[in-house]
Length: 475
Ligand SMILES: Cc1cc2nc3c(=O)[nH]c(=O)nc-3n(C[C@H](O)[C@H](O)[C@H](O)COP(=O)(O)OP(=O)(O)OC[C@H]3O[C@@H](n4cnc5c(N)ncnc54)[C@H](O)[C@@H]3O)c2cc1C
Ligand code: FES
Ligand code: FES
Image 1 (cartoon, rainbow, N blue to C red):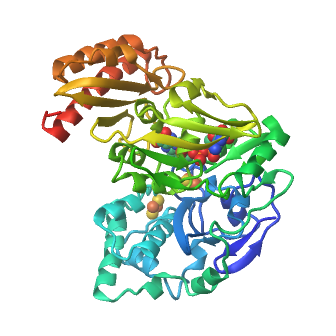
Image 2 (spheres, protein in one colour):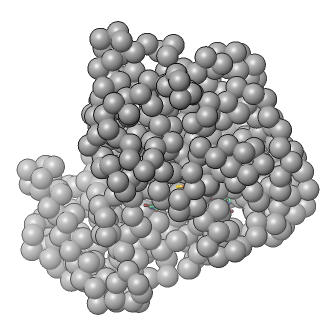
Image 3 (cartoon, rainbow, N blue to C red):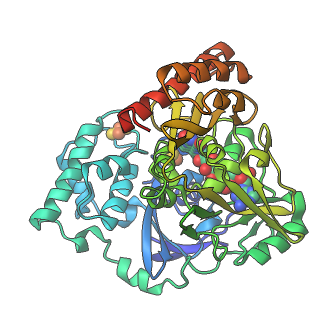
């Protein structure tokens, strides 16, 4: 039975491990302020704030509660719109939205309030870009985004002018609850017949050896929850990796970045900005911030979707997957780890501990994505390119595409076209034409096979244009 701090009250609720936090909040707990829209992480209506103790302080993140398993919030702080203000005494975020005329039907408003609460709990003077990013997961179909953004800007100005104070942003009960939290990952998790929350890697090894294919490992659970809802898949026994010691560690070394399997995409994005900016930028275009607060790099790779956005980058960067189990440890390059449509090289008693990514300092690395919307959309075709230079020419190139085969693929013949030659529009054209012959797309609702082939061509030229713009045409 999960227990957590809900709006300042220690709350326990008897629910099945398959239930989401959103279902529990709106159902047995009777708090209907949090809304359900899509139920799949796309609209942000269900956004709540979760507080987790990390490295001696509590970090607050806006998350889409429709993707969060209720059992995963054991011991954590959960804030919903009911916890931060009343009609007679509005919270500064609620007041600002009202004064900016940013509320019409109000269906999206609780989610917007929660996204802005998480932003201002962390950052009293966010940049315009930070405000935009904080709201990127909240769809509004009536008011439009300008007044919502203006409300956020008004709070920022209020901080600067001293008319909004930190104490007003923090709910009055928050300090007391923070003091009651223990442990650096929100304390120990829960154990039940269908929910396991191991605390060490050795416990995960033993659980997988015992449970075999009945176990469903979850890190962020974003893919697992969507599959459960859309395809009706049952997770069997949930094995939650989010509290395993060391699994959320992220190590930036001189030549590589080691990413633990429980590192959240948004934390990874921030850490990569100074060391591997092209991968940080790739992650920025994925999902929305509340989903990236849950999702992991390992989950994106292991799910083995042919259009997973990090996978072309992992392929061109020649990343390695560290796998372990009771029978021992092994390391496999991502190119061999991917075996087919949603198939990876992993036995039921094995699991992924970390991904190691070479840093590629000095190389040109770039990601391109063709989708119906520039951001927050699944790719029709995506691509990554890495070029290593020697004397103004291409010494080595790696080119990868997603959405053109059952799994993300490298195109070695197209990359060979560039080796030893200058990187010009003409050589890019040649590589693009070869790549079109190398891929084997099929048509589906997102585009015909022929359309996807043409996208392959365009994306190679997109890499070239991006290189010209970033380097002025000099290797
Ligand atoms: C609204 C929305 C938008 C999205 N947009 C994008 C997008 O733009 N681009 C994109 O690429 N993806 C997108 N995704 C997909 C998703 O966010 C990613 O695939 C995510 O990175 C999965 O990570 P996770 O930790 O949530 O995985 P989980 O759901 O926890 O796990 C995914 C799979 O990996 C297995 N698994 C997890 N961890 C381990 C481990 N350590 N060892 C072995 N097996 C493991 C699970 O059993 C499961 O099969 C989107 C998803 C949503 C809901
Ligand atoms: S209900 Fe749409 S994101 Fe959760
Ligand atoms: S105010 Fe109606 S959806 Fe945003």
